Amino acid sequence: MSQQDNFSGGFVLGAIVGGIMGGIIGSVVTSQRLAEEVEEKPELQNAKPKKRMRPSAEQNIELARRSLEDKIAQLNDAIDDVRQQLGNVNGRAVENDLPGARETMREE
Image (cartoon, helix red, strand yellow):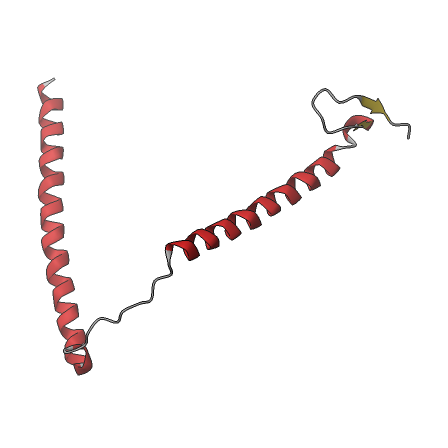
């Protein structure tokens, strides 16, 4: 039992130390790459961040609504296709789409 405790404790300690070391190495590498990029492109030294025009909340809602309507239409088309494909399974056809619809045997 003590070996298992030592393993889990060592595993957790290794994960923590590895995460810290990885974070340090990653930040050093990233800062070096950013410094090199700024040296290559002097216009980035005094560059101001560009302001992006954000769509209003109403426009976002409208876009989301249209997207959902399109997806609903696609789903309805897919459902209709599956109904047509399954309509003749085992020679039976459903006369009505309502629950409890009557099935009739088709003569072939």
